[in-house]
Image 1: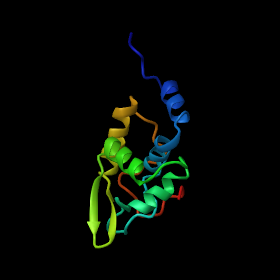
Image 2 (image 1 turned 120 degrees about the horizontal axis):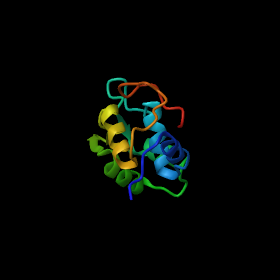
Image 3 (image 1 turned 90 degrees about the vertical axis):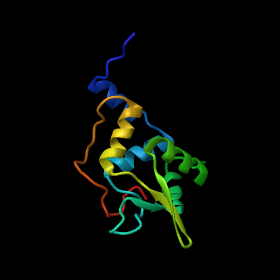
Image 4 (image 1 turned 45 degrees about the horizontal axis):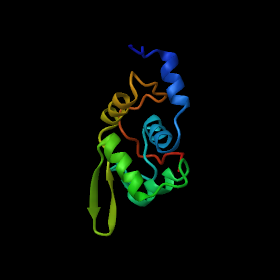
Length: 124
């Protein structure tokens, strides 16, 4: 049996997201991370800032769950700089493709941004 990826099915998937999936989709929609490291590195974010933002979507999450989810889904890479620990995200277009591959079909992106933005994501 083949399931066809219609626009209506994609909208239904989008509206039914919960927890960390809803959080990640929101970041991808916005094209921005919560409190990115700097304007030079808008694709890098400290672990504590990611966890704080994720808790708004899943109050029971922790740094380990956030890290595992981001590594599995978006293939983020760790960075350590003195006392700072965080994650390097792939280019936005690549991250969105990884999301689409996992969730099926061409996702509906509401913001036409090509790369991670420096502005702070409003979800934080």
